[in-house]
Every structure is written in C-alpha cells, then in structure tokens.
Length: 103
Image (cartoon, rainbow, N blue to C red; front, side, top):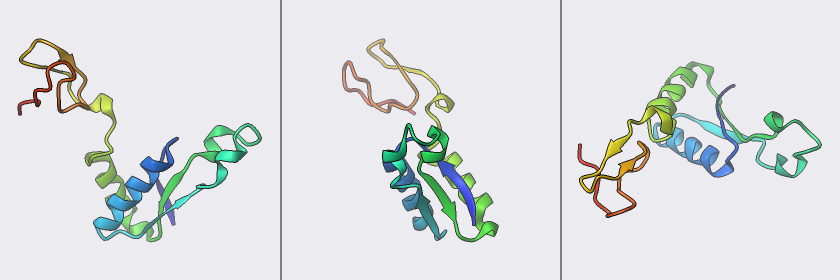
C-alpha cells in the first residue's frame, strides 16, 4: 500500500479516490473519522489520505491526480475575459459577465 494523495477536505479525498477507481486503480481513503481528533492530534495526522492497494500502480495514480482535475489552481494560467475581467486559472467562466473562457 502507498499513499498518493492527502487533503484537508474529505470531499476532495473521496473525489480523488473516485477518479482512481474510474481509471481501474484500487484505492481507499484513510483517516476519514479523525476530524474530531483535531487539536488532540497534529493536523497533518488527521488529514484524509488516499492510498492505493498495489504499490506498482502508485506512480500511475499520482500522475492521474497531478495531471487531472485535481491539479493545483496555481498551476492554471490566469486569463482575461472579453469583458476585461482578470480571472484565476481554476475558473472556466467569468464571474462578472458569465462568459466562458476561450481556448
């Protein structure tokens, strides 16, 4: 077994697991119930983690999560809408006018 992802968000961890399962990689979430232990245990020890059962699939799993929908927002380029609004890279639609980001 090998850890391939961790997040402060339980929903993000389950989403990552679902992405891996859809790709045929067996994965599971650990530390689901440790949120109530925050303060008693270190924060990093309570974060939900995604683990893969087969260590041989860990590299593929990390690549899927790194290059797929979970990549960090700062990896995405800032873009300017036709209305002139500057939008952060993780957004595909302008908050000001509702226009979709062009390719």
